[in-house]
Length: 206
Image 1: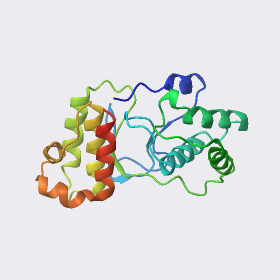
Image 2: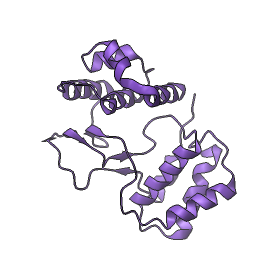
Image 3: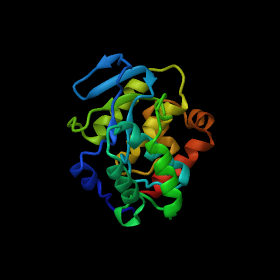
């Protein structure tokens, strides 16, 4: 079972690790958040689940997003953040990251011009932080809104996986199928190897 991350350290330093869409317009507005019928790639919610960073590829993506969201961060603060994240005592990573490799990544990413936003998954339902809904209520909303679609896509499945994980429940094919009002066979057909790996990572983080 993973321990709590030291996100308070991030909060005290006003480091942004959640970013909502900045140009994409939602199809519907709600008190709890937004719905994007065609989805949006402009939503970053780092450290939302208990799953820790478990690969160099994942670490680099997290650093890219953090830099993108904190473009005005002074250089010294940036390197302090990078080294803080790879310290296993802070419960953000589950791998050993050589300092020399981190220095290389941190330097390259700090100088990134960001002509494009970091690669991201498509999201259709976005809940505001502190929206007041229970996780069960969020699950019902996700199932209802995404279930409108005639076809089930990988990003729909991923959103359901996140919400199930956020409810501290193990992700199963049957739970995803129930949320999306489809058959388990449909989920198996559309899931793909990448999401199967994500499912394992999220479940192992519980």
